[in-house]
Amino acid sequence: QVQLQQWGAGLLKPSETLSLTCAVYGGSFSGHYWSWIRQPPGKGLEWIGEISHSGSTNYNPSLKSRVTISVDTSKNQFSLRMTSVTAADTAVYYCARRYDWNDRLDFWGRGTLVTVSS
Amino acid sequence: DIGMTQSPDSLAVSLGERATVSCKSSQSVLYNSDNKNYLAWYQHKRGQPPKLLIYWASTRESGVPDRFSGSGSGTDFTLTITNFQAEDVAIYYCHQYYTTPQTFGQGTKVEIK
Image 1 (cartoon, helix red, strand yellow):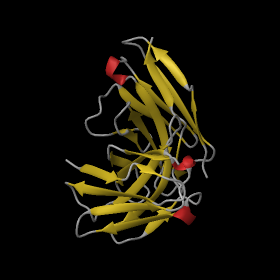
Image 2: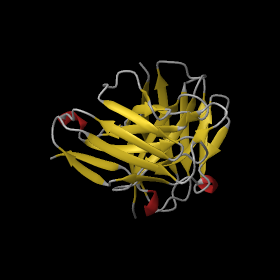
Image 3: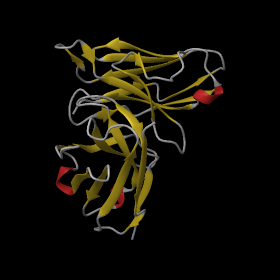
């Protein structure tokens, strides 16, 4: 069974950098795409971006200037970095597996609440 | 971006009855070359990650009870829950993966009447 375990700092100040990592256990790492999605309090889901095992990335244009997703295939991990955070970036951040290119999100991490507050 | 609009925002269903959630996309998510609708449905319970229920608009994910079904094509889609159970209380989201950025509906909260 595929499991995604995520971690990272949960409390940031405005202008700081958000950093989250997701480790993948079970299943193939190289055969899929790896995504980040967030959900602000009381709001819906927003796709942030994704990366392939080879490092090819796609980002939401609304966040692209501040977001970097990277992969470490030696550890079966991928990471999210978001610069210059504001209160609007307060959300639960989820990592997820995309089954294939242009395909569904079939396994999700449990989520990390990131709060941005001065 | 493809806009995804769900209706209703919330609904209350009696146990054993049927729940129907609608999702409309601002443009077609049917890819003509493979005749697939790039549309998924997720169940999201409080404190848990979203769970994939349906993909390709109507294919049930392994392990999902057959009381959950998806239908529709192009821009109009429906998630139906028959014989509604207490454990089905959740927020349900549709999701288009036809194009980047992927987008989600705003969610439909389904509760017990």
